[in-house]
Image 1 (tube, rainbow over the protein chains, first blue to last red):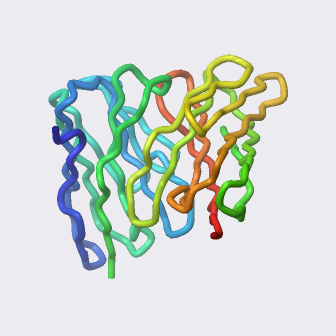
Image 2 (image 1 turned 30 degrees about the vertical axis):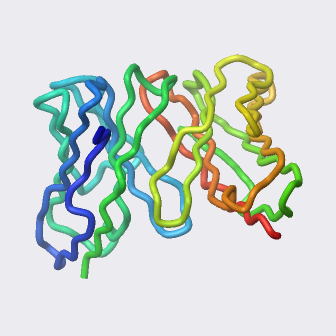
Length: 113
Length: 109
């Protein structure tokens, strides 16, 4: 009964390094999302996907890339990490879009130094 | 674009009733969701309103007025475990969620 699984849970990156945040869901959901949450703030949509092979930009896509080669996986790539990308990253999925419950992973706490 | 407004903080005592308001401006509104997030945790779904009116789920109710671009979450019989942040989120063209800034609820004994 895993739901949405994110790895890693914590990571410290140096400025200019790159990394991939992994997200996988076992509920066969079509829609998947990546959000970032800065301390004391709301969640900002980075990218989303309505199905395998289809991705689209959200509110704050700059500095990130995504791919969706399978229904289960939706990795988020950070290229050339910057201190402004220090945040908690949440992956989520939903069955048929925003009119259904979204299930969130436990988050990845990323610090860029 | 979209913008949502919520009060930043609300405080109430155990057993009381509290209402958390949300106003929104958006071009592709399909509905309004509410999520709860405890400190250090992930958001969890509470409710979704597509039509005007009140939806009740146990101690929690959610209201929507599309003509006023306004909704609220009503929490009754408050318990200490209800202390958390509450986010409204606009259903954007049925495809994704745009979240509000969140309201931090503190329940006092």
